[in-house]
Image (cartoon, rainbow, N blue to C red; front, side, top):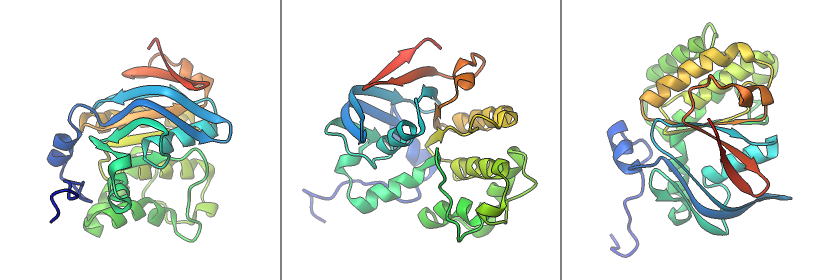
Length: 249
């Protein structure tokens, strides 16, 4: 081992106790960040932190901003200034393979379509856990089936994505985001502005994840969701221009 270069980088499948010890005070820290989020999209001097068990609602503006901000949180966009840390690790300090392994601790609903069309919905749901962990297949299937029922599905969807209804794809996306006890869950427009019947189910599953120590960031594009004062959030922020503005809960 080289004492100058070897560091205690994350393992692919840390135990829950190890994950809590690693993350310390915050799951996600964005500290003084300036970054380009894409053509015409920038953030400047943004600071934001999420503790274990926190639940933040973000008015993300539009799909591009929601996706880009999630990419920033996940280490897929590099800031030009400041740092983004996940479970205590600065994304910029991690070699590519270790960063990919650490992303296995992030669950995500994507604002746009993110299905591999040649795989069934079931295989789309399980692919991350199959890649990042050594969990037994029966264990994966049992957890996926339980989550599917939580979101109103009779079981894991076996059809290809393009043969499922839009509602079932939305449910499957939520199953994929919560499977595997992720430390950070990024929900980009999860109800798509039309599946409000899923709201109560989603809030219940968010509560279960928070009790296990996950931090949940819901990036909404829907004024109706933003206006709901009954959501059990820890706080609310708005992505406005180049700034992240905290608002009253």
